[in-house]
Image (cartoon, rainbow, N blue to C red; front, top):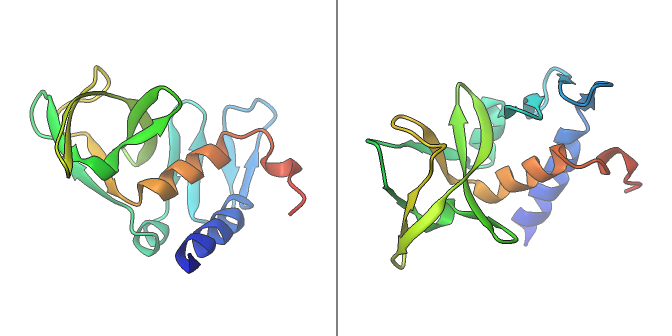
Length: 144
């Protein structure tokens, strides 16, 4: 429980370093924050220190797929399932279709994934919270 509280507090502190522009599509980032860049189209970039401290790691997909990945890599939002992909440093959620499951792994396919893409295998919950926070219109309206 202490780890979850630390992550939530850290996320709040980190995302306070993000300032949206008038267009809503690009963001200026203050130096030293965990989030080093944000774009509505491309996703976000994390500093190496934040990735290390929060246990975020990635694995590289091999071949054309389908791919077998750890079950903990999956993100479920309502009726959608996805994974966090890192490409050129940008992290974004990509929708996937689950073809089969075992106790520890899932077999997925996606038209948006390809050979050599990196997908998150640890720290996925942190990436989800960061993504939700950065894409929320209510972040600056919170009073806590």
